[in-house]
Image (cartoon, rainbow, N blue to C red; front, side, top):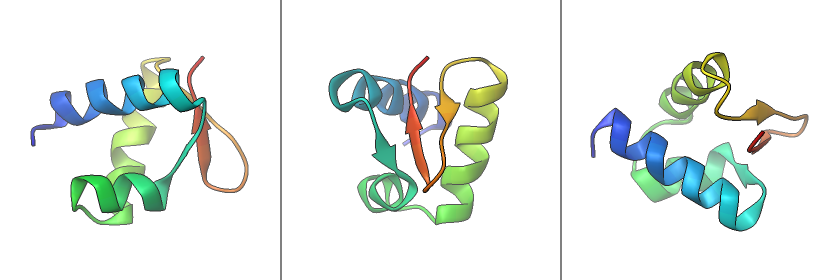
Amino acid sequence: MYLEERRDTIVEMLKAKGRVSTKELSEKFGISIDSVRRDLSMMEELNLLKRTHGGLFQCQ
């Protein structure tokens, strides 16, 4: 799955659930937690989500 597709899926998951964990995303996409963190950092810079403590993220 390409980065853009992962980002779209993450945004949809956040809209549906409100929060997701890095572990959950890593398992869903079959990528490392470090890769998930890089994706989420980029998404945060684009104001697509906001990081919260405990490894959880929520849509802004």
